[in-house]
Length: 257
Image (cartoon, rainbow, N blue to C red):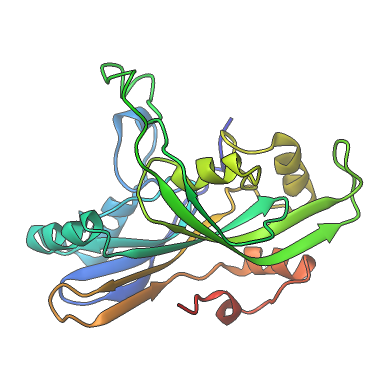
């Protein structure tokens, strides 16, 4: 089962650019770069951006294929090295928004180590008994909604829009931590709730993982200026927010930190 409908992507939206770095709004469903696990794919953010701006770009972090939002590249190997160091040192603040099943009623700092998720093909020779890795995420609820629609044994459906601040960068960390809190992300095929995923496709007509990399904050390694890069939720998600009784303008979903 695919996590999202396979679309064709046109020109990428550039959110930020200077002489050293460039950031795009990566669409849901677009791979960051080529992988032998996805030999049938023909579009990749890295190659598309290179062709679009006419110069090589160097990845400094990644987003899962079904996640949309801020994706940063360097414009030289040196700039990539220096930005990578900021990620390693925990000097990058990453803010995600997730639409989840259930109510998050208080801010939670979850410190739960995660065992590495291994791919049957790519990680065939990896250590299957590797100890769980440290994983920490801060969660804060922005909005809640309840709809009088019965699913399963409950007479209503409950949803929350949650701010997620990962302090570490483990594979599928936000998805797995929210599942641990019994707040699975809508549209998550591997860690979610299939009943609600199906309801969401039928009721809201949107087939994607409802996880958005909304902001990236850091002190520029060269200018030493604070940089905030933001990606919009998009019209489709804002329409859902309206149906759930939440604010309907992009500015209402920017971070205040």
